[in-house]
Length: 156
Image 1 (cartoon, helix red, strand yellow):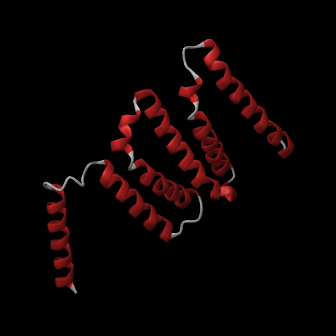
Image 2: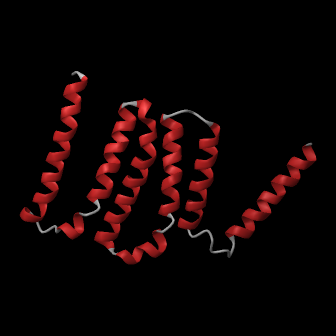
Image 3: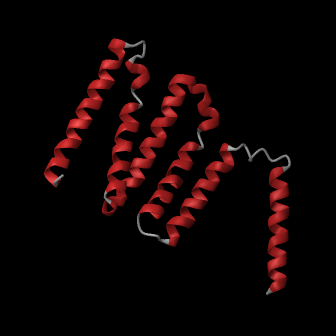
């Protein structure tokens, strides 16, 4: 398949997908107010696909990851209730971390991307997991890290 054929397939698939989204409320009990996250996740999935198919377009992986993750979060809240957002807000921190991981994995293998992805994702996971409830975990973690630092200092 040549490049011009591939270019005409993408708009065709997009138009068919949009037609199906707009048809769903007519033939099912699903309403458009429940489907709007498609317009967030859909472009994200397209960006991800374009970035993965053509690795020279790896810059599309960041917006693709963000839009896909946010669209998934919005779908969850539309169907399960927006009150869940009080505990799911860390997803807004985790998503850029995932995007940085995608850039690292499928783009240039820059160490800075991996470090940034780990820090951003770790902060988001810290809050998502409720680890900021400081009862036992945080004190134990701080003591453990202090011991590791002391042991490393003795080696040097």
